[in-house]
Image: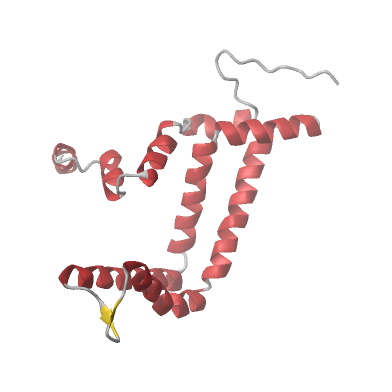
Length: 184
């Protein structure tokens, strides 16, 4: 009962899960992109329905499935990619440390610029150079954490998962749209 009361209070204050994430992202292109992705996400029940998976009959059907499913489930695939990134980060403690060092350095630079201009060797340092400095400071931590291999693991796992799903999932028929056979 207490959890329900807390959830209602949070929703009244505008802190529900549906509203909190967009508030964290500043307005602009990033927010518009996120809103488009969320608006076009397909139901997860049809995305993972095992009855809708089958082996394509020929190469033509395989290519057609790949193109149509990637287009149809594009937003779902974006969230699969983000889930794999999250899995990779959470299962690598050293990568978590490297990210903490990087974001900690960025936060310290942000707080410092709120107080006064950041001056290094008698010259004012621009925000872009400040974040480059934060990246340079945290680079050894990313290198020790194996961030490069993590990036390639995420890209490879994403490619395998998405291409397997797109190739094996039967094409969704959109209302008003029928599959047309092309003459050979």
